[in-house]
Image (cartoon, rainbow, N blue to C red):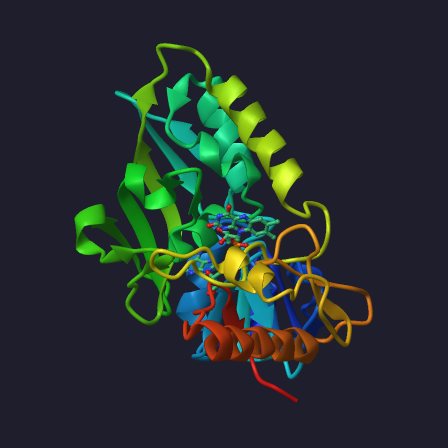
Length: 298
Ligand SMILES: Cc1cc2nc3c(=O)[nH]c(=O)nc-3n(C[C@H](O)[C@H](O)[C@H](O)COP(=O)(O)OP(=O)(O)OC[C@H]3O[C@@H](n4cnc5c(N)ncnc54)[C@H](O)[C@@H]3O)c2cc1C
């Protein structure tokens, strides 16, 4: 099917040469060659089955990606405004589609008296991104309570997979190339203490105290190396506030990089490399990035 034909037959929106600045939390980066926002899961299936281009990149809320200034070749499929169904099943099981916001998942599970995902209340990503990153904080991570996921491939074919089929690590999941998350099923505990809202309130307060919430960032840029905190390592070198172009290291939390309106993706990448070089020179520790780099440099 040709592009015009696909355009006529989808219910969502496909556009060409779309700036990705509004689709990531740093507000930087170039354009997507094609940018598709599916209407629902069937629309996504139809699109993938008929759009014959490879090089598909999925984006959720763009809260853990550095999109380079040269943009992304191929098609970006953005789930930020779609795939938001959920279903309360029996025996503590609940399913969410991949476009669902992590913050809302914390609220909805709490309201249903299900406990175990309260920690997601301050993670500004989508479920799809959280599964891809194995997002976590306050001692929890998103895969802990997953029983099954549904994947879609580049041909639009859906497959259900059990958790045990995945190799899950710290901020990492091994996912076969060309497969993407569209849904997850969680098994949660009944909250007999009825204290999920209290837990959520405490987590959010703690974040506000320690992190530069509300400023453009991607959260923690680096993973914590074994036996160390990336933030402490950076702070110990006196780098808080250090700036390259429109990007600076947060004065509140040294593992956060904040972008201002003039920042380019290249400023942020240079600052990341500078931090890695300094920490390696002074501490002999390599800081691996948590944030994912996508697209091309100019
Ligand atoms: C202020 C702030 C605080 C944060 N706090 C935390 C925290 O406490 N803990 C934590 O772990 N993270 C944290 N993050 C990082 C981020 O919010 C999480 O990693 C989040 O889960 C990413 O989701 P996303 O939808 O934004 O993913 P994106 O940034 O859109 O994508 C991230 C990666 O996942 C891939 N991806 C996206 N959707 C899919 C899909 N459906 N299928 C397959 N791959 C997909 C993308 O291609 C990319 O490689 C924070 C970020 C910010 C800005």
